[in-house]
Length: 240
Image 1 (cartoon, rainbow, N blue to C red):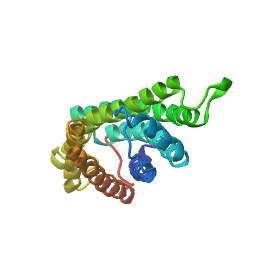
Image 2 (cartoon, rainbow, N blue to C red):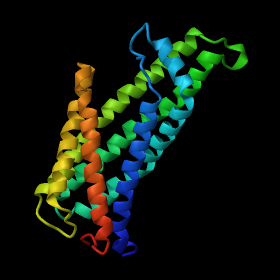
Image 3 (cartoon, one colour):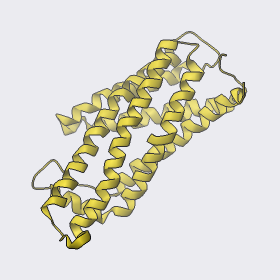
Image 4 (cartoon, one colour):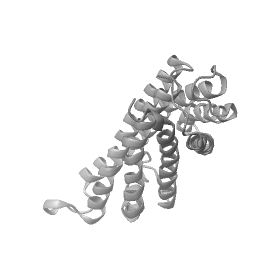
């Protein structure tokens, strides 16, 4: 079958590219230093000003996020299904569906962020047709876009968590098949999956934000480790 002998190599490269892209998103987002919240009435205007002040970093973060969510993640979802369906077709299907649903929700957040950057610029500097800076309509529009982005970012973590747990179970526990990365790597996917589900707790308490870095680190270990292993074992072919 055409390119079947390249599946492991392509999957490994995609895994590494995805985590590199994710670190670009996280790095530039943190570098923007957004200290205010669009959910607080007295901080929303300052939040839009922060977006405008850090426009360059946020453009890079949004562009990288669009590449990850719109291309790399969906491609990896399909590749993982092809690689591991012989070990557990049910779990591989959950991986495929979970990552695709995560990508769809994340793209809504990415699109909201892209629009937010433009609205924040108009809010601070004035918009087209003589719309003045600080216009109430721009304020509400920007705030809604920011809250939509935060909401769908968190929503995306639910299907992602289910996908990572399913993937971890395949690698760590499922019977061996054509492609068998080291089983210890699967436990990192399991940790990342559980942390993804628990990250929702940040809505109730900011202390639970700790699950976001746990998820990121565990995902990085799994993706880099498994991606490197697949590249090193690129001669392996998935089951027909």
